[in-house]
Image (cartoon, rainbow, N blue to C red; front, side, top):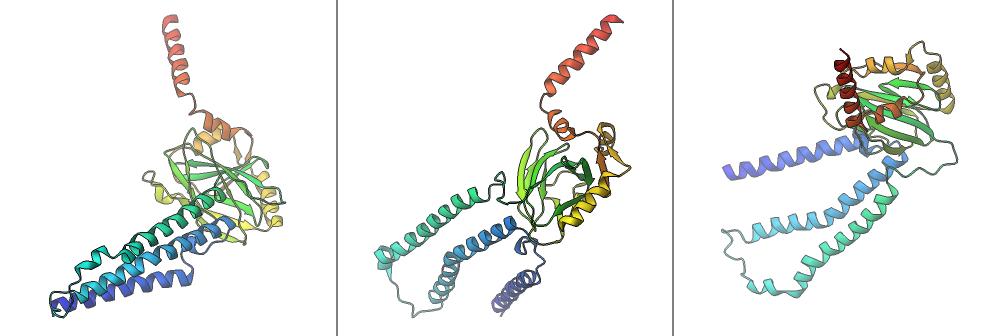
Length: 302
């Protein structure tokens, strides 16, 4: 009876897990399975294809496991012992042939998708892309729009059906920029500038966050991505351009301090701010040497 109870309990747990997964997929609460951009859509299709292909192996293997375990259990005295199956060429061909075919298919798909979904690859469009410079801070996100001389904190505004060219860095511990509804994550590292190309194909507000644990304020590193019409985006740009809050080197230094940030719009008064953030990590040894030399000179004069 105890053994039967364990089996029944295991079946109930498995059914509950399958039911919860099916409910999440059906209600669309899983962002990666409910894409709102062309990149996320291709990534979702690739994920589904890979899972379905893997099930061609997983389902037969577990089915045979259950059948063989039941048929050749200790209590079944009618089971026929067949030692010659170990040298059956047709079975050996199936055991090795099917996985080899699947691996070959996956290798071709991986090669193709790795190039098609390269984050550095620009999206094809007859419309001019919007450039956005992303800086991961402690514990907030800074978005700089160099073509419009504006910036925002913890809110990313983009026009719908327009390619967005992201350049991404960090002025804090290594982080990861991720908008699940629009595409996969990409790392943000200090002293480095990475690229990502996304495009929303539906208007809406999508969740953005950090996908890399980076300290005690990591949980607060969330932002809203608002995809709107071109006219609404242009109106927002004009609003930000006349903001009384200016982002220059001094105000940026205050913003970069480790603390959570509220949604804020800035007029950008330092056009090369992003390059300055990246470059300050490029030659730290030179800066240290220069500072030391100046200190020694001052000491000698005293």
